[in-house]
Length: 393
Ligand SMILES: Cc1ncc(COP(=O)(O)O)c(C=O)c1O
Image 1 (cartoon, protein in one colour):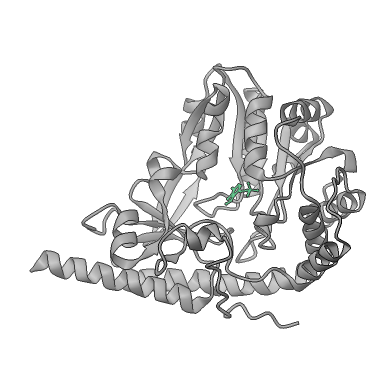
Image 2 (image 1 turned 45 degrees about the vertical axis):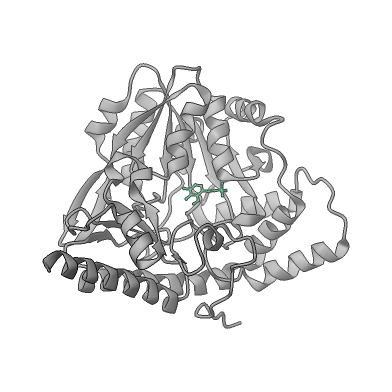
């Protein structure tokens, strides 16, 4: 089957958060979903589910668990048992459940900034602090590269730090951490006896031959302190179906997560389970085609920025469909988020929401037909050129 990712599908009028948050006429390159139809097998499976017509509770789908275990074994050589999987309706809710489950009020949750904003807010909801360690950033020309900063990590850990929340691949900086980096992280966590909550939702969205390593696969001792969070939602563009899962191989941690989730998170819907099963069973050809298209968009953004946005640096993400752009040297008359929303009518994510090191940055979601991406970038270029010429008058 040939997928046509160039096709522009109207999403206004469908309740899409991405397209309806802002006025008509604003091009949205913000929230992380793709403007592409989901894999046809997923759509067919949902049709069958709808035709059946009964939408009762579904608690513990055996076939889906088996498919997930087989997939983890195939991709990572990771032996996971069905009862080590806990389904949750979303990964943000899983992050919050983990913050609730481990430690006492007053304890700390370590994380690396800039980071996906729900990381920053989750600990506070349970009387815990977010202990922030900035990633190190270096630039090769105008391409940004983020890395672990062991000294800042060590400095951010306090005697009250109980958990480390890892984002791998890392939203927004697009790093796919190497085995060696993960080993360093795991050692730090072992030294301070931290639970690791590893959000790996972007683990299938990889470029340039990068390979994902679930941190729990490093060693049984690491698995014993780790909650791994995964979902088919980013991979196959079905986030609205609401199905995610935690892999927890330590029975004591599993009990604590289950207790913290009980009565609060709600169930995964049967359409969520249906979509997940079809996606994992039959979505691979779509995923490969989508990744090839996304790779083209990723390069398109980088080339465009380097050619038309002088002074702006950016990441060439190893994973995720998100670019991260540094506007601090661009001399914009306003904060970049407001400037481009008002003058170019393009909505990106304000980097400041990803923590202090994100100030002056924008996150750009390039999972959209290339013509729309080109139009959004062209609008930004021309708004910026106009502002620069007005400033020079
Ligand atoms: C790192 C990360 N975690 C979680 C989510 C959201 O997950 P969910 O929709 O399952 O809550 C996103 C969405 O952008 C994300 O980037």
